[in-house]
Image (cartoon, rainbow, N blue to C red; front, top):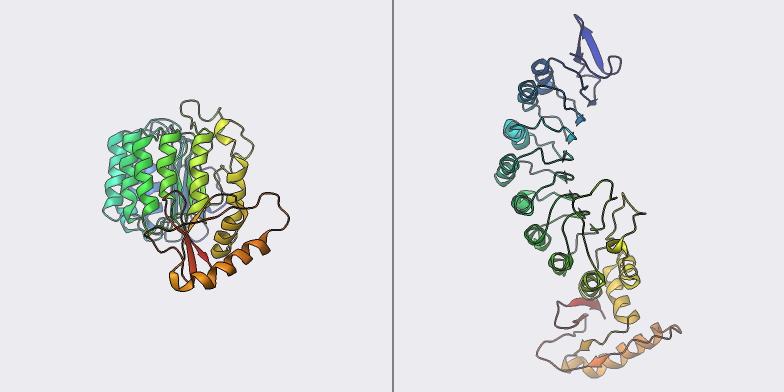
Length: 374
């Protein structure tokens, strides 16, 4: 067997380098030919190995690659498994790794970034089936970027996330996600059990209509902090491109203003200096997202009512109307600090009770209501 490094975490026997399970925390297979079956068995027996990373592995014969993975499938200690640019090697790897994904309770991070369409739809459906059966239930980070997934197959994969109740980061950049994929993602965002905090969707096929499906799902969502929907550098994504115009951003601005106090960013932190039409986020939206960074969400909602000049429909319960109306007007006046733009309010009657002594519910344009502490 030939590994990158024979001095760090390996011990030699009869000229072959074997994994030292007492010292090795990360194992990176080399690019040259090696005894895949023996290496796989060693990894399968290892009880301290935490991270297994394959990067630019493309010269190994398919049969040896699959033999290696059959051994890996027996491991139960790895928490991070990464395949990066292993083009032309995939085969039936998800089927082979089924025991590993289903039974390894330590697995928290799975990354597959092939930089091409080397995986077939059938192979991706194998992974979807494993996840639907409850495999990978402890995954917190799922990274499936740069795989050129079609919109249909991406939708199927996303729909299988229903059992990933611990998922906090989902990276689907540089694929071909469009309406069906966005509809599946919207269902994830509406799930009240979702713990998703970071969703990366740069460089897909998302336009205004697709984006609005996602944005509407954020109404009432109280977990997602980052929706990175701006594009990756053109050199990394020449075949897909999100196209969100000011009208699309306006739909998100309305949602953040009225019913979402959690989302804090729409730009990709890995590419902060990319400038294109989709990356030009309106100033008002930027300001609202900055306001959402405040951990006190009642205070955020109060600020949005006070600081923005939008006409809001507010109704008081009859029993508290005389008592609360002077208080709320005094509160608005106290909050006015000399800003020339004073918010205007329309006090209206309708069929819903939007005010109580404990909190105010403010609605805009018939949308979902945001609670505001009185």
